[in-house]
Image (tube, rainbow, N blue to C red; front, side, top):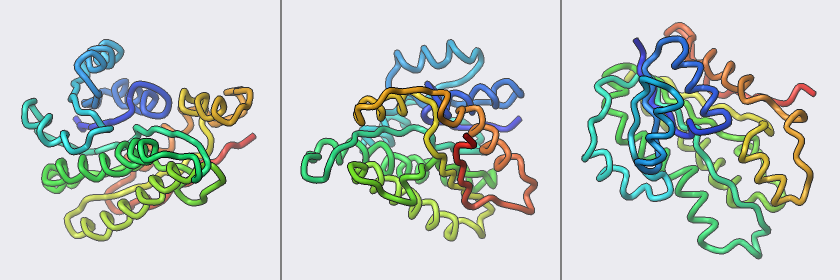
Length: 229
């Protein structure tokens, strides 16, 4: 039975991936920001395990994990959590920058560092769910795009560093996906939100599972997913 550590399992793409892996009988370990959230996530997927660690405060992740039982096997580390806060460069304060860089970039780097010894032993797979903003930056997306451009650099470096250790690394770049984050983006953009116009999280989950399930003789490095309508 494969074991998958998943961030962002509470909604959107992360929830779809966690449910699909759980339904097929895999062991899922869900990262939650606090004990209350961990209880909610576990209730939604009976039998799932949880870890508590606040991605907005990556400096504390190592300490938090040292006080909890860690999985004895890690086949996949899935970085799916993310936050967004739009605004012109001239208006975005330091707090907005720190929030997005901490959660979207520094926390994935720290989580990867902490799980890397186990991933090496298990010849595991690290998946970074990035964004179209990780390839192109639009007006008012500077902080979010910077965090996602950095996430691409993190994944690319990690892939080269860990190839000889048998660790696979995949970046997935979804276009706009129907999710609570997308609803927030539309609110910040002052636009009406119609989820039917965007990619279903299940479709992105399907592409992620395809990358996970490839035989060991192949690896998906970068996967771009765009709306088909």
